[in-house]
Image 1 (tube, rainbow, N blue to C red):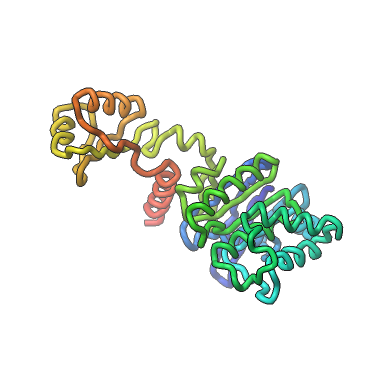
Image 2: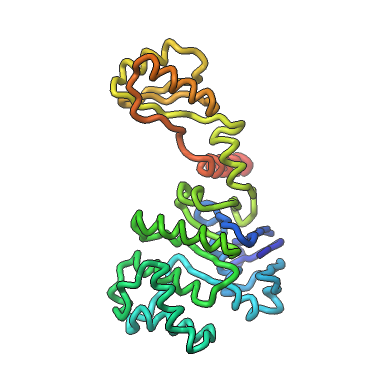
Length: 311
């Protein structure tokens, strides 16, 4: 799926200002930006629910402006909030959308049961939709988006309302869909989880694409660039740790924390050497790890640069 030069305004207020986007098949692409950056507007346009003022969009080889119905047949769409038909049971709800996508009657019951199993709602078979929790409704929304086996999947805040276990299951599901060749685009504010599932990240700000990166490249460069990061250490004896760190050169800025400290920036090799030295010196280290994540750092750097450029 590709979008090039997409513009959209609401009255005199521009929402998208020539935004470009590529969502490769077989990969999960994360869409990251602040509130008001244009993410939901873009997703609504990609889902054919909102017309762009200008630009070219191709979904599964179909031009959105000339062949919107063919594009819809290849799209699975899950908005951040959606209504459900409370008078239906969960299986009737999915069967309704199976009919809307013209699935063969013989295939429909098998597909509904497979989808409920896929999103771990098989125990809700025959139960009314209005009795589901918010997290269960989110999972039902994922199943609905997958009814017709789409080649492109658009998800806006899919983890909203999910408990930790359900979030892990959603992550595994999206990775498995990508492995099957589906192009997955996910918008979310939970950056730590996006870093675990995404192959690529597209950073947007004020309706424009300001960066596209392979997640592996971000991780390799480290939260502070050039493979260097701040590291947080906790030890059983905080005073003993502080004394050892004070006597050791080359640790960068050392900050005190309750029961520990923060040092760096250091490379992974430098951090490993430090950990080995502390243990050899008898410091009982109970936690040692980098501060923050590569995606969080890229996002914060983007917003800081954008703020400075507008001053």
